[in-house]
Amino acid sequence: MKEKTLWYELNDKRGTLYQQGQYSEVTKRAEEALRVAEKTFGSDHSNVATSLYSWGTKNDGL
Image (cartoon, rainbow, N blue to C red; front, side, top):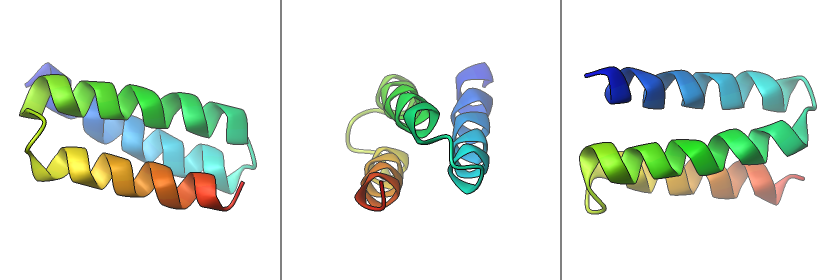
């Protein structure tokens, strides 16, 4: 349960950092969220896809 909460917190933090223009931190949080999602939910879970999508769309604007 703790890891699920961590994944949600990382995603929220990543969005906040992006809005603040802290792009290097956005990338770090995105990579961490992806690792947590894969470990916690399994590689076939939709949260892994969400992490990849969010990471890609945030990095596309950098």
